[in-house]
Amino acid sequence: MSNPSAFGHYRVDARIGQGGMGDVFRAYDTRLNRPVAVKVMRATAAASHQSHRFLREARAVSALNHPNMVVVHEIGETPDGEPFIVQEFIEGTTLRALLSEPMPVERVVDVARQIARALCAAHAAGVVHRDVKPENIMIRGDGFVKVLDFGLARLTTPGPDDLVTQTNLETAVGVLLGTPAYLSPEQAGGRAAGAEADVFSFGIVLYEMLTGRRPFVAASSLGVIAAILSEQPLPVSRVNPSTPRALSDLVQAMLEKSPEQRPTGRDVEQQLALLLSADAPATASAAASAAIRSTV
Picture 1: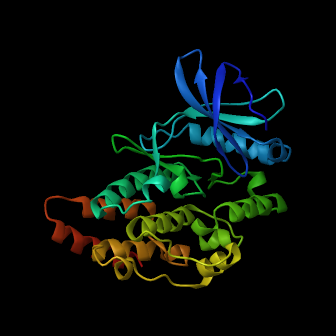
Picture 2: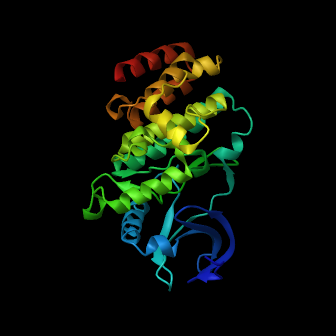
């Protein structure tokens, strides 16, 4: 896609991102005088029925209202029939950029709890993100976290085009090629992915935040997928001994191969809240460990 000059009343300033399904532009809303981000689905993807699903699920995400989730302002189509989403422009740094340096455990827990809140809100509304990774998490200068890019999201209440079809498998292959390190076993195995898949991917992100490395590493994308499907990662506390036992146990539970054995997003948020408790950290840690063990 060449750089367009405008999408309706959104003046395009610059291309700021590019992915498997489309491009992201920084733009300016000339009606409301505010910067926005515009994500445009590529014509090759829009040519299939994915366009319909993209817009339907974008409408569902736009109805979500949570401070830790990017706000969707508008959806539409270009004159060429390419679907686009207009969302708030976030001034901040991606979690990926922040991971270039070690993060204190307290900071990790604070950021993780905000991510958990956003995912809980999405799951409660029947929306699964399906692409939780550091690149899709922004931290503003004031420490506020925003979860971005629901472009691969799906509804947990399926429509007729959410059945496991060849088109869905092609979408899954696109994800595999893009971010294999953060796939759940369900996604890696080509199975349906529910809210539990987001918890697994979030567990990978949390593992990386605490240790500076991913739990599943191999020389190729296929090797990573094989590891996700079959290998057990070293506990976080073995890699980073300064990690509280309760937090290490939580991450290990999130990385259970079986979706039914993982804590829910709400469980994760509650355990992180216990760990953030400033009143009695030792008691909170013990309580969190006990609660985590009861979920697995």
